[in-house]
Amino acid sequence: MTLHILSILSSLFDNETSTYTYLLADTTTKEAVIIDPVLELAERDAQLISDLGLTLKYAMNTHMHADHVTGTGLLKKLLPGSKSLISKASGAQADVFVENGFDVLFGRHQLTVRATPGHTNGCVTFVSHEQGIAFTGDALLIRGCGRTDFQEGNAKTLYNSVHKYIFTLPDCFKLYPAHDYKGQTCTTVGEEKHYNPRLTKPLDEFIKIMENLNLPYPKMIDRAVPANRVCGLYDVP
Image (cartoon, rainbow, N blue to C red; front, side, top):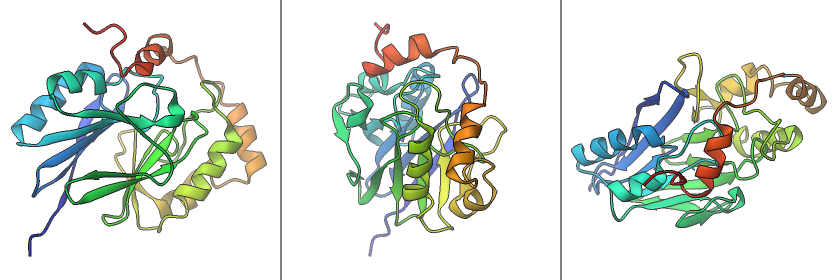
């Protein structure tokens, strides 16, 4: 019997935007996907994929980012044969559009899409039930969550998304966010259900918290959003 192991290489990080990029692969078939790549580091990611002898099937995003330009379009150029993937509700271009319940297949593994809007309309969480892991994008961060004051953000929608589609996963499931600003790399469903300072509150209190964050305007949004609508290739030759 051949054992098919899902390898998670979560040491890919962008210091400029505190973005995590996740490379996942079936270690037997060598088929891989990459989640939330960053444009400036696409060559690094492509080189790693080549060094490991992997075949990239999908370069995919948890949502249309506002704080960095995605590397999906450039990765398609660097690794011909790969396809871009994003949620249909994002409004961005891609080769493959996914919706709630869609299964992203690579090797013998699959990531099930759970629609988790609220930070943006197109936010999704990718879940591997077999491995007990989920990639939450900006919907749920470690002891936090994505902001809801721009780009279709809605605090009530985000709260309901997290409670319905993430907090209903088993407590032991490990959660990998798209960003962290304190050097943390992973959390669990159980931890966030008990210790998240925002999402453990009643809905009305959560909405008040989100309305009073007083965060600065995202410094890259005016470049990132137009670029990410076209797979990150807005101003890439």
